Length: 194
Image (cartoon, rainbow, N blue to C red; front, side):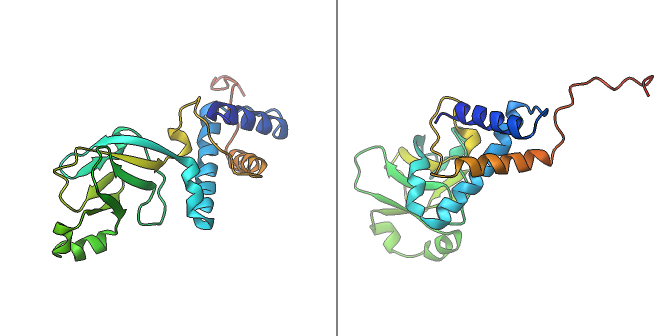
């Protein structure tokens, strides 16, 4: 289902249940994004491989041994080592493999000799940066499979709702919205009015 269709369905559901209230589409999108990111975390907790359904591949230039993800998109933060970065691979046909590593392990392994001989390149995710630990002078570009938050999807981009989660999502959005006042469309800022 396209992102815009999902937002419209959610607005329709909220309008039917919370009669008389109208919410701006941006507010509904934001609340839906919060709920979906929670669902993505639940998917991550159950079975990490299911996150592959929510990835999109991006090509990045490598600049001084790091990539700035925020130049093209955002990622969902997960408690795992690679966060929302599911895979990294070179654009050129080079025999190299990338694998995620923690900051702690990077500091511990920095002085080890095998890092200079091995074709495997560890990387660590720091917020919106992916830093490569080994020499990247031969690699100018990498591709990355990233899990993005709902807000980062284009309106006409497909978003896969996990089976049986659509009504759960809409109900959670409704709960979040009911904690906020509905849009006030009446101009009652007149000081002469009682």
